[in-house]
Length: 291
Ligand code: URA
Image 1 (tube, rainbow, N blue to C red):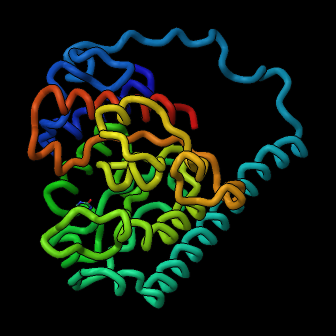
Image 2 (image 1 turned 135 degrees about the horizontal axis):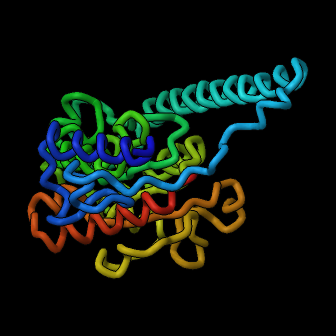
């Protein structure tokens, strides 16, 4: 069994057994595996291996070449680790700036903790929700309540861990009675979210629900017409985007997938809705394959 297949099966087993995932629509399995394979009932077909995948043993690389081979990954690793520390430092500074600016003072909010966002500063995948709820407000962490638990199941089903992605919200403080953020509240908090995106530079952003989708995509279209297809971030201001056209170059180009908010999914936990969300997430998995 190839390491990839083993990883997929282990992932699926972890998803379905340990977390008791009932999120996946019936009869679906992680990409690349049949449902039976995913359930461990049959071995996946082994991928034919090249007859000699190793370099020719008759001509071993000389010491100088070995040193060069070893030096490149090490230098790359160092550069990566420096880049991650740098991104984390910039996120910390941004959080401090948010706390100082306190854009939430301009709207109605009663909160205990600021919920700025958490995860990998170099994440390929970023999830943007709406606003903290009660448990997020209590803990200062995004998506830790019921909707958050469902989001985590989705992340694991996609083959990622919560720690390997970045999760944040449009608003960083809890709205009274969990009210949906107004477009004015979203606009006031947008600069901090946009800067989070600029620092992390994810390959894909998944917007969860309408407030995040509308803000980042510069649209007011309903979710049924937004989900299931790719969008480009940043959108031009002429199409309703919040970034002025002369500032667009300062932002990385990122693919965005809009999908239903997990809280909506919990309220409407139908096979059809689960299938739609899973299909959106599979498009994301496909996009991130090999990144
Ligand atoms: N809903 C959100 O949109 N964000 C959270 O952090 C929690 C619930």
